[in-house]
View 1 (cartoon, rainbow, N blue to C red):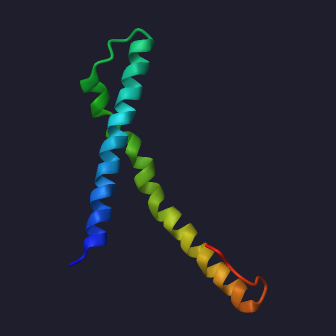
View 2: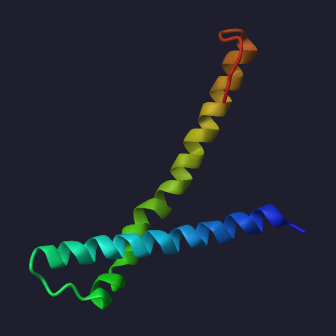
Length: 86
């Protein structure tokens, strides 16, 4: 049974929900502060668009981390650095 991947997926979904709720409240408060109607339904519909850059950036961040580990292990193997603390 794979407990850790299930836990990570559940925590990821929870993080998306909390982020969506927090950004909805921020935009609602901004709309009310500038004298707009601040309708929560309209603001909540536009929130998934805000999550797109984060979803698109994840593969890039994983690739950067992978590239760093490859270069660091190569440098350690060559003797350029003595110890890599990651």
